[in-house]
Image 1 (tube, helix red, strand yellow):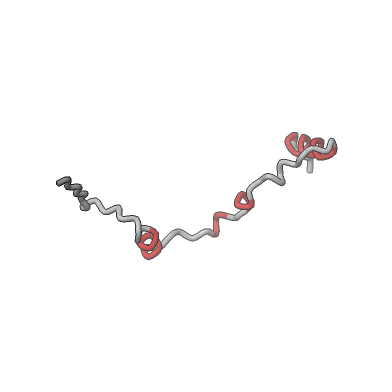
Image 2: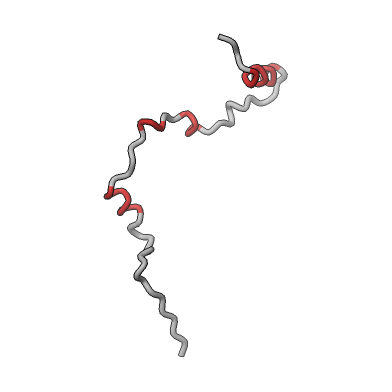
Length: 64
């Protein structure tokens, strides 16, 4: 199988002593996202637990 132009460029940079861009790549880029589960109702409620973003809230500021 042939190597791509981008891979040839990376290999050339490594041969010349420069930094390989694959090292700087995030570890999360390699995660298989097809196995990731969506949040349940309980998960959404737990994440919004302490945010106080209800629409019926009001703010009162009184100066005396």
